[in-house]
Length: 407
Image (cartoon, rainbow, N blue to C red; front, side, top):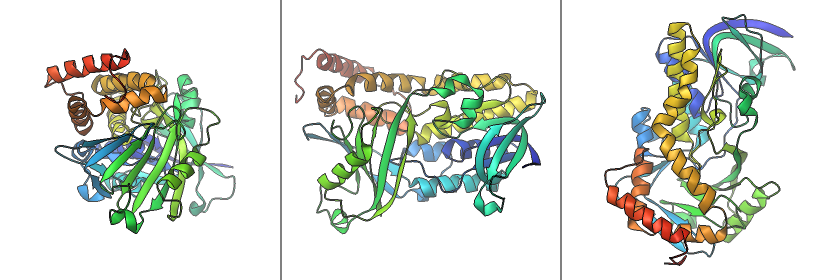
């Protein structure tokens, strides 16, 4: 059974950081927007956000669960390299609370929240496209009943395996992904007291083939909880078993588990984000998670902002042409970072031997400075060209084996 409901300027499918930001920005611009989102889904995510996110997207500092003062890189042979943040912090958010705050903000701006699961894109009459969805249980719909919305444009922000994308943008059917899984556990008292290898003010990034053969594992503190997770693109690798092993190694096997989550994480922007008519993808659906680091929240919100502006221009001009410019606009600003991190992941994550060298490189003051400058400010900082040159030659020395992995 189908029921015609309402017509909108834009329907945003997916209420994560990308979709909620797109809906918020479109509503602020005065458009009639529907935000269609499934209830209760929380993406597996370490939850790290840079201060630049708070500034760029007007997010209050009070939304943070914790503020981290540094990171520890742990090599396959258990060597550690500490990377303190010289001036600033990394914020930590709980995706359950953070994403809901973003969705609520979009509603306050005027977006209409609709709880339900996307089913299909329907026929377009040239001006409008249909979105069929199945209402959530709390909406009181009969089992199997679907409703239909209509809009001039649809923003697909429904994850790495976007159903909107698969139905409208051919390249979305074959995303390049890493599967991530984490367990949120209560922070034990002995961690808070400092009687643990875990520091509640530090993010630990672990490079170990038994925990992840091609990516990394992590322990990220969220104040009252810890995110303990891993990721891999290797089919058949048991990431749940890897997290169990990691928890045991850290003495956290008995810590109460709050929740567990797993999902694919894209590692490369799609070659096309729009269908040339009504649909534009953003966030994970467009593949905008940073390679190597897996960082996605900031880039999802930046992508959602670009998507909203592109749809806004399309609505003003009564033309779909602005949709095709969204990808180039996003990559013009962030493409260099994605390129550098993509090369880094393909080479340095290829084996434990290379990852051992990579952790050694992280000891270098120039590497640390460039890493934090780029992360905290979300751009490659060129104000010290000699530092880049020094890092380049050190990188080449490691590539050629002229430096030992422990140097």
